[in-house]
Length: 95
Image (cartoon, rainbow, N blue to C red; front, side):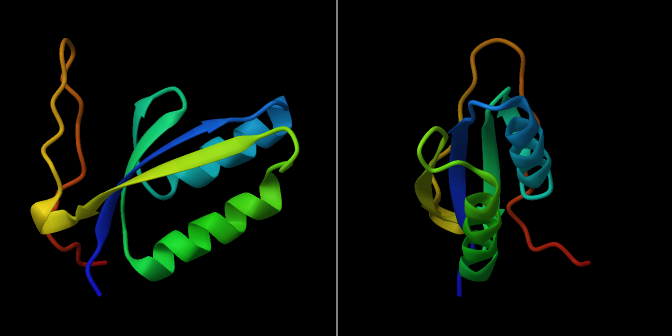
């Protein structure tokens, strides 16, 4: 199944939960801003990320949003103004 490119942003009310979510996001994508990440994820990776994030956040006070930009080969380009950002390589990774 094709990997998709996502923009994921979060607003976490508690500093301890914020650190845990930040670490989780750093494991899955590239930071664009303080609470905004660009992630290239397979369906299984996205499901795992959502499951782990749900275990961390307080659903009554915190929020995480993700915007699906589509399959990586056809995802729209990312443009920046000012300081350039390092974006994930859209090619397959060998681990």
